[in-house]
Image (cartoon, rainbow, N blue to C red; front, side, top):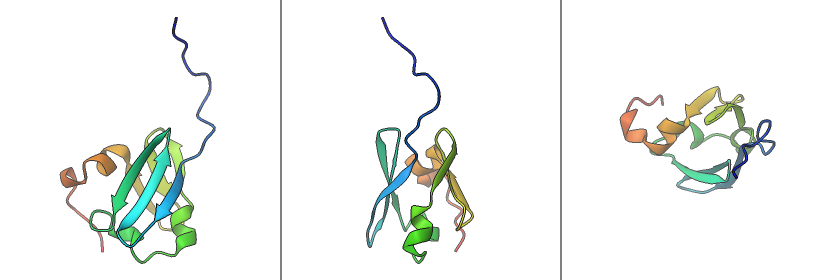
Amino acid sequence: MSSQPLGKNTFPAEITNISNNGIWLLSNDREFFLSYDDFPWFKDAPVGKILKVEEPTLDHFYWPDLDVDIGIETIEHPERFPLKSR
């Protein structure tokens, strides 16, 4: 017997680490590394603005203070999305 989860995930997405190379994002028991090479918007951003991440829909993340929104496919395969804003 398998049961389906009820309701929406109550654990919000969160940043678990910020380093000289990038940030780590935790969502739904999965952790992702976003390098500054692939996601340059975070490199010089203040910590408080990086930490304020929302997940408005499943597998879609938004940083309102930075006006950055990124889908899970972009995080998992940044090579498929080569255009970057500096």
